[in-house]
Amino acid sequence: MIALLAIVIFMRENPLKAAEAIYKFALSSAAKVAAVVSISIPYYLSGLSIAIAFRAGVFNIGNEGQYFVGGLTGALAGIYLHLPPALHLPVVVLAAMAGGALWALVPPC
Image (cartoon, rainbow, N blue to C red; front, side, top):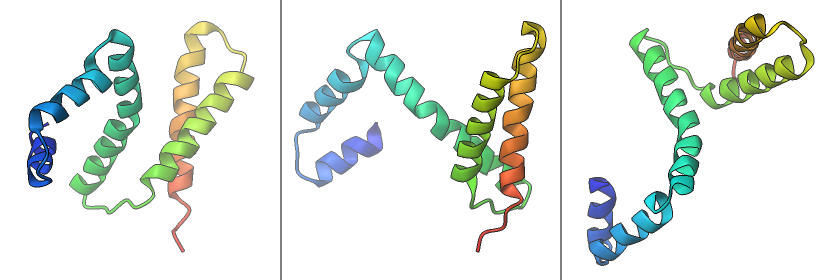
């Protein structure tokens, strides 16, 4: 928020008006807060995965594709696999992880 307000001041706009607009857009109701959180979760997870890769000394450029393919694989596994409820969630999560990992094997051109 501080960085955003610094940009607003740099652009010679009113910071209070900008803060009010942010509040109205993102925080004025529970539904808006839920929407912001649900949109931001993929970014947090992607950032976490990149941080883990950097910590391991690896540069991972295909994070977005891995996230997409992993999500698609998990969704397809969730739809088409008919397992007992106790096994369904772990198998879907493992399928999503496997899909993202397999996509990471495809080298960039």
